[in-house]
Length: 89
Image 1 (cartoon, helix red, strand yellow):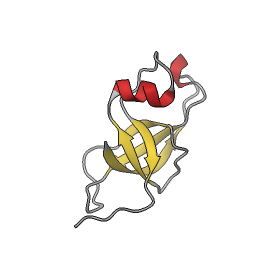
Image 2: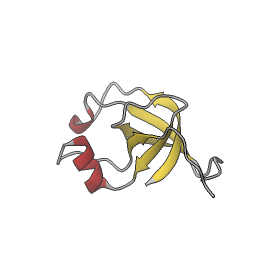
Image 3: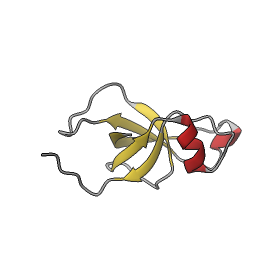
Image 4: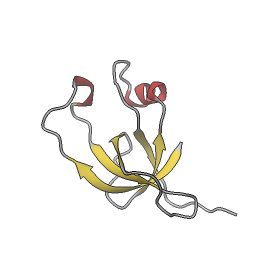
């Protein structure tokens, strides 16, 4: 799992069948120090996250199918939790 910051919503009028009714989020991966890295990506929201939230992102397709309860879902990245706070020592 990775940490990310939600930076936007993605609006799509046409989706694959497994994505109907699911919110898509534009995310930016962040390091443990909170600094962004890499390119921004799109993730399926399974945690009711919103813009500005720090989230946990699952990057395993098999786990995404379990989280979304859909064995046919084709998903690379799934927001599976909203982080209240974290501390690194």
